[in-house]
Length: 479
Ligand SMILES: Nc1ncnc2c1ncn2[C@@H]1O[C@H](COP(=O)(O)OP(=O)(O)OP(=O)(O)O)[C@@H](O)[C@H]1O
Ligand SMILES: [Mg+2]
Image (cartoon, rainbow, N blue to C red; front, side):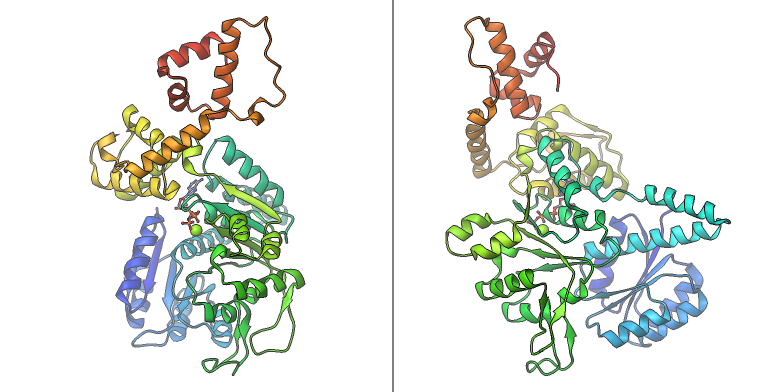
């Protein structure tokens, strides 16, 4: 039985987007636009969690929280507010709010918060029923195993993804190292950043994500470092910056390639010194924050062009992680497709059980300029609109534009020449080789090069798939 989320907000656009996000995450939703209504829903419909706005037209959010807690003390409530001042946050926590979320809302983060909160409640409920300490200990271990490994959220079996996950595993516990995630748009940089946080021993501390392009340049400094009261005209109260709020956890600096030069210098200083001052402040504030930065720009190129500080680049690039573009991930496209089909089947109540082989071919041959995000959107649309149980090529709104076909061809041209690196450690050409030896050797090379994506390999070799399969069998080739 899915959990029920009660969403309380007087703004219909927020009710709409939160309801959609919660349903997308598999929950049932109830909504209320007034405090009275919220309290009634809590009594009558027993939701499992409440998302409660601080400012409601009839009763103050904190009062609503108090009443909810007096009726159902164990019900988790997450407060939402456009401005979180420390005093209110403390008060709300005392009354029993489990979390405080600042508006504008970050929907993905809320999904994770709701999921984590419900999981915690579940764990506590189950723990309540366990009697002895030893039993409790065993139970905790079992539940810990049950909670999903955050790295599992990154799907893919291609070598590129396996290597990437290996790097992530190595660094999660070297807790303070800065990570720079690079990759094309939609290739999974944010997913990687979250995985790093939730797989690390910082996971119970905040993960704060800042999009450096969505905050106006003149506000970025005070957002990041906070400000003292009176530091500038609008600074009516002191405010903690995101660095302080993320203390102990992870600060995800997204679109770092677009940060202005003057701000780059300030960021560099914090990374070097590990402390900073609030805007208008004199006190040094020490922080323990892991920085994960991401960009879809080629930062080194930006450095060469003079758009980016070289010293900052090297500070950020302690551990580089590269999210490979989808078109270089071979059969991962199909694996991801299957996972998205399953997801949207559940979401839209559909039952698409098969993927037609021509649809597979289309998916494998497309260049995916928008990467995994584009694939996800295309599958969402296909499942929503279609009622058949098999996914056909005509369900996929892939209309390879001239440019993307060209990109794909360019890519192919680039890839078809095996580079010197591909021949490292290879025996020199040997006159005793037969033609079969040569063929065996060459097919193996190309299979490895294209990650055993048989469609692509067959295309490269200029033979059809059946012939390729026959040859793989003949030479006993294995992955
Ligand atoms: N390996 C993967 N497995 C499963 N889902 C993935 C994978 N990579 C990306 N996704 C999904 O694709 C979508 C886009 O990923 P994400 O937002 O992390 O990309 P991004 O690189 O940050 O993009 P942008 O540069 O546009 O910000 C998300 O819905 C994400 O969950
Ligand atoms: Mg992103």
